Length: 180
Image 1: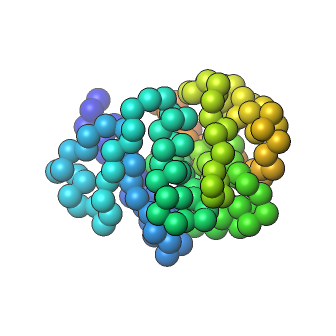
Image 2: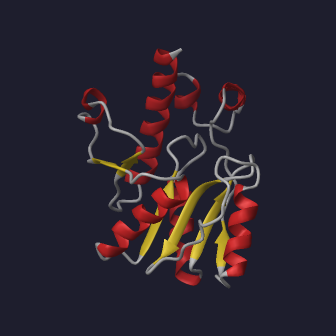
């Protein structure tokens, strides 16, 4: 139900916030739709609204916003990644020292992390979103553009009830997430 889904999302968002905060780097929360001030008011960061369009257009706009503000490396990470830790974010940033793009593959054929170095590249055109082919299509687009990229640790995201149940059974997942 809605209350249980909201509780799961709140726990995952807090987990992601904690991992990002541990890096000491600036960050923002980017939302696909208007946020309810009852929960965003408690966040230690402003929530910004994403542009209209598919996921690729929204990620590209987010990256560009940070590049326009002077950032040289930007990493976007999902808020539904129970295995996310500070080390993953730091690995992604380190990869961007040597590569133009970094991806964090997920087991469902997509990716849980996307990072780019300024000025950024449009590796999102023609990519089928929320598909088992998302990662493969992005790799193909990067090859087509002759862009050098790296991939870091594969992690799982939570898209379905089955994903959630698997997470709750996974002893490698932060115990605070398993007991919420």
